[in-house]
Length: 283
Image: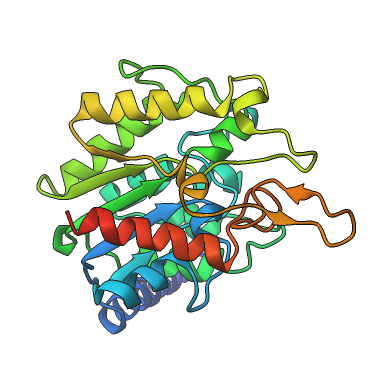
């Protein structure tokens, strides 16, 4: 048995060397890079990943380098109903992504089990995120709010510190990003307007944590308290588009002019969002 000990130790060291070499090789072959703009968001930003995504439209219209690190269905906060980071809602939440960026440790995201519909791009995008260098990035746009509303996450206020509240997670996220790059420009962006399938507006529907307006107002106040920028997209569709008409009934379909089903932006919605960002960044 004693003769086997050196062999076992040698095998363990060899495995460790292989693992370390693999990590170093991955980092060497994919060095970290910065962008003019990076976007973090939910499915409002990540509904498609092709040339007509908000991020790619923004890049095409401005000539800026834009990194898209949006994950559909995710929250700003951690969801106490899924209190372990093993839940992809938590492991890909904005707060958890900020933790990973600050510690430069993406083990949680790398090992997350993601099986929900329309999440097949998560791990590929998370791998790109590992190579994001926020120290070489100028602007961060954060659009995370709608799913906190859907999940009835407690809103909190600008003094909240718990990552299980919307405002506390927003505050913690901004603090972590500033620790990485104190000079980075941070823009908090509200959700667009939302309608339920029956036409009910999110301003009139409470999932248990408040109406969407409550979250947006708290978002705005927390951004102001943190000294970061706030851009509202909530009235965007009303400003730029009429609704469409249902071909069978002849009735107007609320929000459909710029959405697929009252929530997710269609091509025209993504074009409107990217144009709003172009105008805002041009100020």
